[in-house]
Amino acid sequence: MTQAVLAYAYRHPSAVLAAPGGPQLALATSGGAGPLGATAHPHFFSGRLTSPAAAAAGLLAVADVAAVRYHQPQRPVLLDPAVTANGDRLRFESFSACCGVYARLDVTAEGLDGAAPGHGTTNVDVNHPLREALTRVADHEPLRLAVGQEELAVTTTEGPLLEKKVPLPERWVRGFAETQVVAAGFDLRAELPAAEAVRFLRTLPRGGQAATGRSSSRGPVGWVQPGPGGRSLRPATRPAPGAVCLPGPERLTALQRVLRHALALRVYGPPVTAGAAPTASAWEVVLPGMRLTLTLSPDVARGFSGEGGVLTALTGAESAADAELVSVLLAWEPRIEPSELARESGLPVERVRAALTRLGTAGQVGYDTAEASYFHRQLPYHAQRAELDNPRLRAARALVAAGAVHRSGPVATVTVDDHEQRVRIAEDGTLSCTCLWWAKYRGGRGPCKHALAVTLTATPERAPAR
Image (cartoon, rainbow, N blue to C red; front, side, top):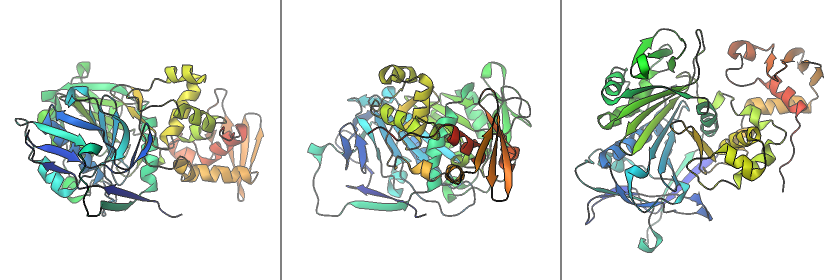
């Protein structure tokens, strides 16, 4: 399978520029999407940052994650952060090259002083000279921010565009799809005040990944237990009710960038019981007018791309048609309410949620743990890429095409080469299998290919409406 190439084309390198009213952080934009369709160099915001140093540190943290490979040290693919303007805020996003850490900086209305941001998604150039300039930004001097240039202010030049071409990792694309499914199952587990947040984060091990682009940690998966009222965290040797998984704590190193500006630390995770398997978790530093969130996969050696949370939604009989219908109702809203979409589309809420999951595989939907809501963005991914590139789903479709699935009551037999696997369908519709994948993960990383094949035969997909 050939690997896609993501091409960035910028009018100029991003830079901190000297200007009469004080320095300006001029972020160059590449091709993007907006309410009127594709745009070569969209302009989303011109105004002032109310907390310049915190914003500069947060943007550097997002760039740090994009430049790191936490597992299997080697030179990472350097992907420029994506930025989405949702009308009242700007969201900067990146993924680590190993697909195990997702970073997002949300600059809210309180962090921006100027006309309301526009709507749309693009990539912004973050280069080495810009990174050096951002480290020198101070809070005592005003800093203007321009995300893209206003068309009337653009001065044409004879020189070529600044171009970057990087291979787009298939796992990175699937990781964006999986994180919104994983995060939707999180609840707030702890909220530490500033002093306690700084103390806790400074006690964590610090690897050299921010400087070297790699992490050498191979330690065991750890846990933390919230104290009374969720106002503190202490290390735990094993999971217990209320605990939060902290796999590879050095992967939180990027948060060190913003500690001196921190107002609080919020920790999110799924429900946990004694003896539970490792889980993903989200770590959010609250800053003046903004939030920086890192979402960690369940293990340093385990990227989000293999979690399988989107697979069930991709096999639904109406999911493709539902996703097409729901997609036309999205308008870069900062908060997507499934109940409102259900009213507008005429679909049940459950099918709307499945449609949002499917749209997430194309990078059109993300999830904000702080507000417990989805948001709209438009990453430059082919709508079916995550589905086509998922090996379990491809294998399940091949099994169905070969007539390998035979169902008798609550048990289905799936023939693979010269052996059989049995898939049991419980009364509530959940599936279990006799294969090694199921024995190892017990559904913790999504359904196996045999269970997916059974689901596909029970709910044949319908072609999207035209």
